[in-house]
Amino acid sequence: MAHSAEEPLPLAAGEHPPVPGAVKISSIDMATRHHSARTKARKAALDILFEADLLQRDPFESLADRLDDPDQLVREFTRELVLGVRDNADQIDRRISALTPRQWPIERMPRVDRNLARMAVYELDHTGIEASAAISEAVGLADELSTDDSVAFLNGLLARAAQTRPGRTTNEQP
Image: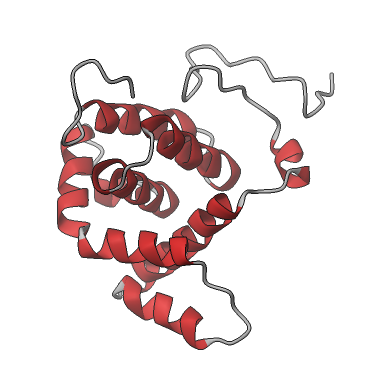
């Protein structure tokens, strides 16, 4: 049975929505949806961080390549994410490592997931973004760009990150 963009897909056994009220939609529906400017900025930041990770170079070099290209628009939020992840890389990677099982170290994560986790942990720990928004954005991009298992993995990892983020009060919901 085909599902429309308005009709959510049923969750698979053991699958949970990334945030309360979130619904699962077909990736075909994603192709017809328009991303917000912030989602586009996150996607561009992910591209830059992924490239830097793949080439084993400083993310600033990949960002500079785009800034030097007059045909490319680099949003301010993209710059903020890339530089924020770069400037806090050690702390972010330590947080991710502390939140993942020993048998699944950060180096073993798919590059897309690793860099989505880095961006989301940066947003959780170093910006005033609502935890649900950071998690939802990362999980949405994982659903669109990564493996079938990535959504649940990142959702769990980022929920733990939200619960343990610096400055979080005990009554605050992730």
